Length: 170
Image 1: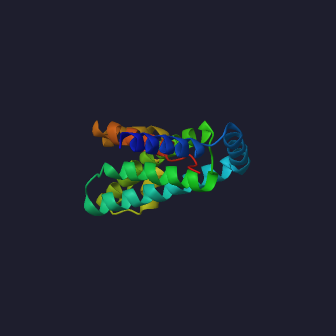
Image 2: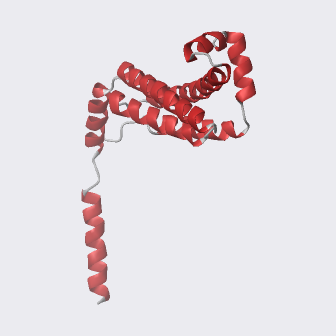
Image 3: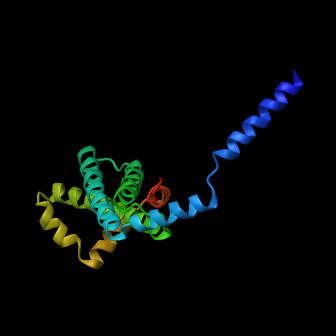
């Protein structure tokens, strides 16, 4: 019986070794993947996803009158997957792009939420309030007032997700 068990484990190791890609196969895959990368398209798709997710975040926040930190995580995942799908990248720049765009999407989502709150409070159009609040000095003050320490955690997870999920899998 022991002899049979030993024989089976040896066969399993041989099968596992046979399924391992060779160095040539890995090199060919990397070269093919690098040729298929498209950083500009990945960035455009990530930016569109960041904008769309920020608008959705703001709409939900204004409608519920509640800042939902989990929305930042959704922004990170959405941006990361958009960069991955459109960019098909394996280079680090794709992850960095996903992380930066996820962060910008989170900031925009928070800012648009504040625009919505002010517009509703003052009974003004969103575009009028956006023009007023988007002046650099006013923008910084609005973001300082809207900041909560917990935002650091959610932004951090969003940045990680934007980075991690921006890379091509196969």
